[in-house]
Image 1 (spheres, rainbow, N blue to C red):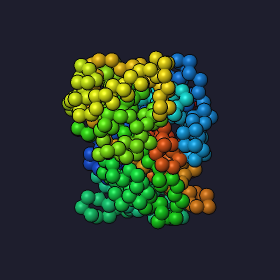
Image 2: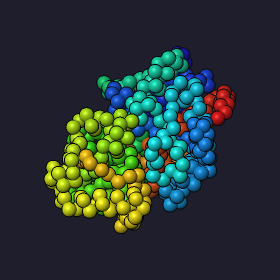
Image 3: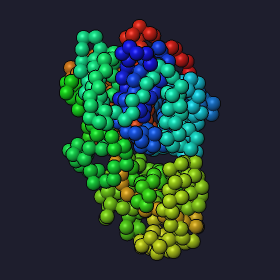
Length: 462
């Protein structure tokens, strides 16, 4: 970066790095401010499964999948029951395939289309990921490219605590570890510091149904962006929205993953009984698990499901932690985990009938890949809050808006700092609804900042 003021200050070195890289590509000087010294393994991007929805991508075309931004928006509409922000969803759907091309071609990130199982709510396979299916791998790629770019400067650890607006840009107020304040004049600020999941009081205020669950996200996600935006009069929306997860292993706090369910596994409570249709989605199922006795449950799987899930780094870590309990029969497994053998056998037999097309599930589950067969395994899980999904209202360029709809010039938000596309609560969450707004809105913000600086975005065709 030059000695002159940066064109853009990015708060957050997760998805915000996409904004930094795109802005630098377009000729802007960028300062990235990151609060955690351990961000490479401790921010929400690094803790994700690296699933990025891309509608109408070349990866889909290669395997004959017909998709479009309009279909993506329709899926968001269906999952959120019409409550999601379709303007933002539409902007993300429109840019998603072009953005995926940029990740692959400009940054050299090897993306793969996930087709071995289907995420709830997506009408077609559209999620792209990296080998290992883990956000830390994706983040490593981004960090490598940032280090190679002379236009990007990293300030770590340091925390953006305020933004002061001016007639010609704004001032980023940065707090350093020793408590000293650094004021940086800049053309624009991108708030990419996630939501408020790490602030217990805010969680209790807006998300009481999940407030007692484990928080499995960055400790620096304390609502900084929300507070900065509110001080500037910004509109907020969907503050009751979040991504929960019902598959966090109690032992080791590793993510078991919902692929266990979609490949044919199921979940039972302390009595060995199922308590709903697990395939509705891992986010909303967190609250259902939290309502069970002891707020604990067991995911039941077999060797086939186990082997199918090894593609996920998170699942391999769960296995390596020793969290799985095995049994040669359901009776033996039930005895080992302390649930009713009769109940466990009844649940397995009922879902086996669904898999064979010979019966209907009392909870309405219709997707059972195959009946489970010996040997069986179980892993104890607890509900978790992964990240919040509400925040500052933004437009299709990721500009932060005032309540009357006017953009706050020079202020942008992405990811958990922005309002999101999941509607209210947890049930509207689709796989990738966290990562696509984190990366995609940062990408759109960078292009808009560049256009304001009269450096038009380089066209990328998909």
